[in-house]
Image (cartoon, rainbow, N blue to C red; front, top):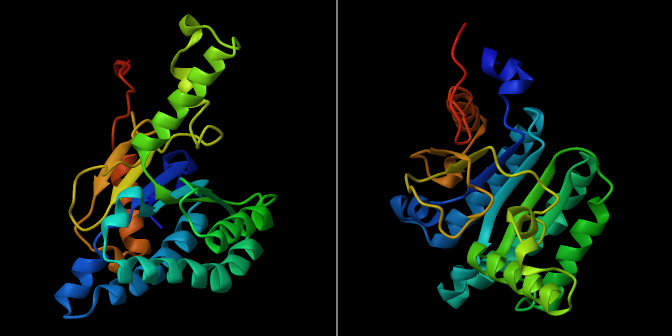
Length: 245
């Protein structure tokens, strides 16, 4: 292990990952897109184990965006099938590893059995004290912010809050990750360099690392490399670095 990873202060508390490139991975191998998604699940297992082993406290993954509904119905059905298999095959192991599962995103449009699986995962692991795995499922950050604003407006209408009392802390307390620290590091695979409506509020001061490997090829070494890149960044949060004495 590198000197960086031997120093807990250099390890990000919260890592977010945009898991991109399943389709391109499959296309490059003349395979159907669903084959890329299946391999992507294997990569997710590797990422969760590695992040937990490295001392990461929160790992947030972008598994299904609110824009993904525009994909072919057969592909969507396959993605939901992968979620069902993930619950049946992996949640017990995550639970035994003391990992807590949180799932963020809109649930109103989801099938009843999917909502039940989500609630089962969260309830089963709710008391675990290890790493928290946050799964963004049917999630879109703009919708998240719109919902937060709507909730704040309702409080104002009820007289519980005055408009001039609204500040950044008010908004932060109404988003779905209000009890989770903002990401220190965001990793996006497959060479793409954009947020794609993911954690727009939360990533105000996040460090971004873009890697060329497609998500199905993601492994511990890639994660370590990204953490080492992060550890060498100068994070000033809008301020100035203190002058050396």
